[in-house]
Length: 112
Image (cartoon, rainbow, N blue to C red; front, side, top):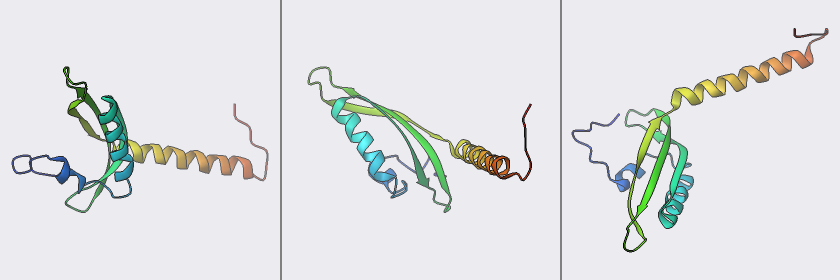
């Protein structure tokens, strides 16, 4: 939803796009990865400029400086998984409906 010709990605600017309820978990994962020079993987929501909300999977790694052992850089990817999450929710909803129908059926039901 952002124009890559105009938008320069800086974390402070990106933070404003993250859903406020998801921000603590994301920051905790990134802080831990920075302290340990390790990887992180977090699903969180993003608030788009057009008002829509998307679910993304952020996957990142922090590399250590070879001389100091301290975090030197972070890189990673963010993948839109909104459709996947909707599909998963639909499967769970249908499974629940099936369980209710199966368990509450006034007559015996068998699956072959």
